[in-house]
Length: 248
Ligand SMILES: C[S@@+](CC[C@H](N)C(=O)[O-])C[C@H]1O[C@@H](n2cnc3c(N)ncnc32)[C@H](O)[C@@H]1O
Image 1 (cartoon, rainbow, N blue to C red):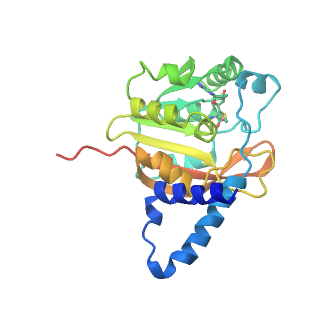
Image 2: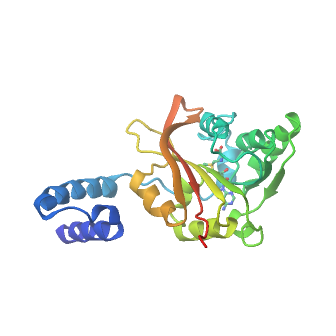
Image 3: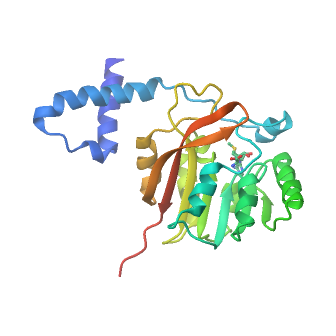
């Protein structure tokens, strides 16, 4: 057991270059802090991955589907530096509230979803709201193979599930769907002790290490994810990133 812990610490140090700056004087103290962080991560309960997404929708309204666009998405769209217009791809759009909200703001939206029930709900919503967008029933990993590149890829609640079992394919997919200068906006669950029934939780280190491999951070800040399960929603990360442009 002790050996496993020691290996975990060295692996953590090895993969987190930001922790390599500590001086000899403070090394002992830093190692204890790192050990505590690592142990917290090891003991943090990992949610069981969902295999039957359509089944979740068949049972009714899922915990992530508040039926309205996410407030943080609306907030970020109104900010100066967020791209105004262009092509957008939403990964796993669910019942479509966010994709439709973006389409109504003149983004050229493609929204991909693997659950036929969720996509039918999105289609009915788009019809009701008179929104024009492209809704695609597909596995987004397959779709990405021939989809080309988008100005912006949007992910709400997809990364925090996919990273549990498919982190490498997920990053690979993002690479294929973007070009230098493309934007990536992601909303993901954050550490939250009172998040019973809430989304999978991702730490700041997870995000910096995983998504930071492909993109530069424009902002990484706390937000809330609305949910029919909780009046105030769940703690989340709002992560706006951009693929570096090639300097000549
Ligand atoms: C946590 S939900 C988030 C849905 C939506 N973005 C929202 O915020 O309401 C993740 C969504 O991804 C979809 N999904 C899961 N795996 C997928 C895949 N391989 N291809 C396309 N969609 C997928 C699920 O059906 C589900 O609707």
